[in-house]
Structure formats: structure tokens, C-alpha cells
Length: 77
Image (tube, rainbow, N blue to C red; front, side, top):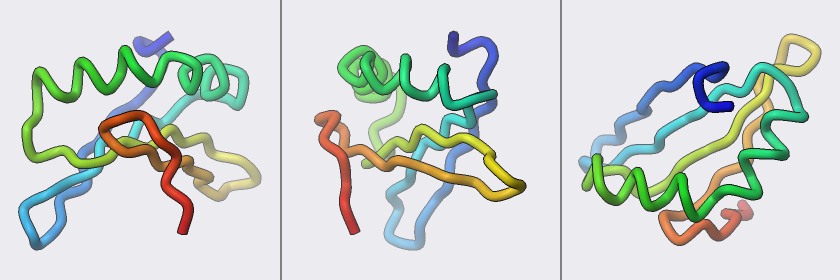
């Protein structure tokens, strides 16, 4: 599933960042949201400055993202 996605890292001034995973559709985003632990394990191994990751999908020409902590918890705000 991940090979169908685009990735980018959004860096912040405080030295932290968010890995954004752009999914091709909502079905892929829902499937990946069930694999949060696997995603966070890979992030923890590869990027120490990444504090969050987002699963995103473009709908109606707008980007809709769900942001998660490195523990896989949904960030609400």
C-alpha cells in the first residue's frame, strides 16, 4: 500500500517535523490507519526528529489529514 503513496517531511522551526503520507484514496488511508504501530516503528528507526505523522488524502481538491503521535495516538486540535 505504501508504494502507492507520496511522502514529504514538513520541518518546523523547533527542529521537529511531521511525516505526511499522501494516500491515493480514502480506502488506502483507512487501511494504513490500522497499521499505525508499524508506521511508528519505522519512523522511530529512521527519523529521530519526526514527532508526528499524518495520513492524508486529497478530496474535492483539498488535502484532508489525520495527524498521529509517534505512539500512534490521534492528535485532536
